[in-house]
Length: 320
Ligand SMILES: C[S@@+](CC[C@H](N)C(=O)[O-])C[C@H]1O[C@@H](n2cnc3c(N)ncnc32)[C@H](O)[C@@H]1O
Image (cartoon, rainbow, N blue to C red; front, side, top):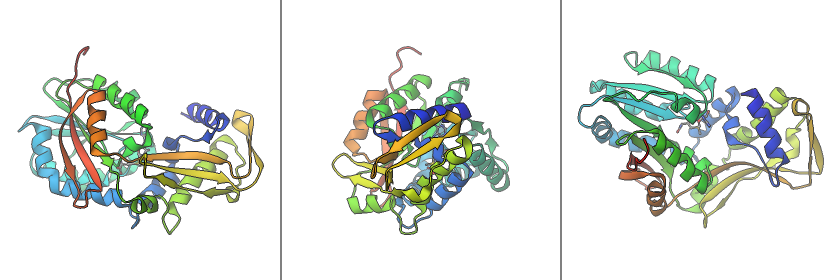
């Protein structure tokens, strides 16, 4: 993992324009900062998805269990699992036969999640899996008679460029069996002011979350980033629906990273692209599902229609 981190940093900072990969935000400090982000007034996404789950949990259980069948609930990038817990709690109360398998790249996030769930939902069948999404998923055997229900929540799909999202979901459809399900949480196109402030909070937590990746590079790879020399500059393009966060060098400077034996020059006002949070229109989601081998069973919405959780089913099995 360390080697991969080093390689990805080398690759990203050598590129034109420079970028860093957002999956590396999540060290111990990054996990905690993301929990703070989810609690911010401006960060509506978590509250919207929580509202959807509270209202749709009954219907989701009917759909997931196909009226009584057992299932594996596999979550990509589970984080602290706060929203998922609403479903887990309800499913257990209803006596559903299921196992919860959260997959996350952050061992720290999985440890905290497991400790919380063992304490609050002791009867839950739980198997935590650490690693990259597909590296882990491809190792899971298909259990005869059990449906795989994938959860990919919090608009994590928005971290991918649109063509990459098609590839990602196609790979997912290919790995799953016909009839398996995906619950995909997606942030929708809305008032640009609402979106922009979600990534530019008053308290500066999102800024700290972005800068923490430079701290991680300093600590783990022997970098000498001076955090004071970078400003946080998020922006939203209402035409494409792309919210992006950047760190911008406020002066000409050179940064050295010892473990990869490299130096990187920054011009004044040169950006490092940090994270994409792509927003979608419903028609685009319908197209995305078709292109990647899924059909959409239904969309669930929050009361403001800011966010949707789409229930998708693998529709296009030709070679599995
Ligand atoms: C933005 S958080 C979202 C957490 C949760 N899904 C939610 O909706 O609140 C993203 C989570 O995905 C994990 N993650 C990011 N990229 C990953 C990858 N490529 N493979 C596995 N986990 C990843 C991170 O460690 C983090 O816990």
